[in-house]
Length: 134
Image (cartoon, rainbow, N blue to C red):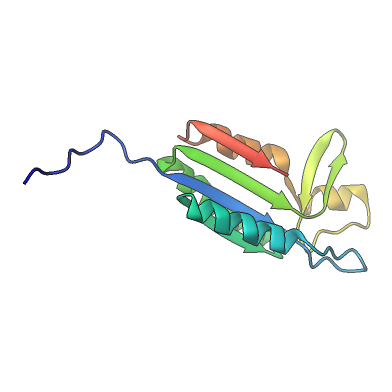
């Protein structure tokens, strides 16, 4: 009986799927939670290790991104998916948490997740391939 030959690396793909739908003041959305859940299920079937986060606050999104940062240290492919409200302010793109303050652009900007932060996380990871789906 022969022993399996160890491979030089263990391929691992990781994903963070965020779906925010439960926004206040008639801003609720119908599909983001289902979209994120469906994609996470499909990616898991394809061998991805998935973090699924739904109806997250700004702080919850930040925490999930921090955990995803750790996952990328051992990943070949890193995939980030977001479904929910997004906006562009002063040339920057922002992903809204369920508690984002939309009262003014200033408040919205500083109570939302910056898309550039997500890009930086994927760029700094050890993964060879990065995918962002919005």
